[in-house]
Image (cartoon, rainbow, N blue to C red):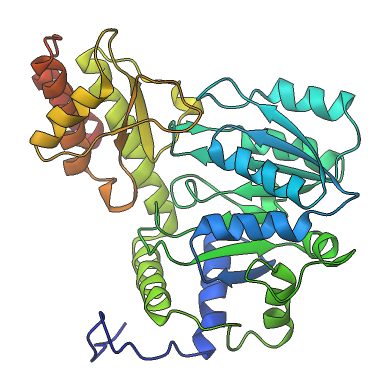
Length: 364
């Protein structure tokens, strides 16, 4: 972007209407999606609810995979609209088992929609997305994927995987603003949304956003917040300059180095690498230690660690290496601070070995 020539905190000019379509196309490139991309003028949880509201009505049935509060909310939104919903709930804080999904599809009633979260920031886990989508494709099921905490941190090829509805927010691995989100919608998804009385005249109406697509993708409906779109544009500039593959690799490297550092401390990761998010690493705290005490000790060193949330078991601390935090300095600070917190609590930890382990991964 060129010199803006205005104070970004007030007096923001309108976002140029011709650039909304450009933003949508750039997001389509990140998602590797040739389907319609629509922009939602709110954080991603609003986009997720809009999907549920636009799909839910008496008649369609859904298989809803629950591995966090977001999955639970999605099922509630579908039920509120009259859809028949079967929840599959994973073990607390763990990925769903593919066998459980196959069993539900093989033994349960016919399914029109299957919904799941790809990566979970609440617990640092990764659901087996390709395997689940293969099961759904074989049965002609419309799929909904919450990719907010995976886009930019994991490989995500919407067209290759056959995702009908992908929901993303730029505030995590893409390092963008939280106040805008986007969806990729396949023709099959539109057919289901627009059949049988889709809601209209609502901020949650995807049918209303379809009019933006059909009308030449000019001015968005409502009153867009221009600062959010300028910020999204700047984030996409950074992603494209770095290269999406490099962004994904950077997050994978941060996750690998974090796990190596924790192992050197004698701390076991919550799940295996194959089932782990590249954005957040969760570690079970030693028995008898309170996560809050360790988090407070790390905070006194200027490092922010957080406790697991939602359906995750108590006793997990999360090390965040998301977006700009997916870097050597942040990973090293996270691991050293966690080791120092353990030591202050009377638990032995080899901080030097942990720092060396992080350095070795980044030196390869």
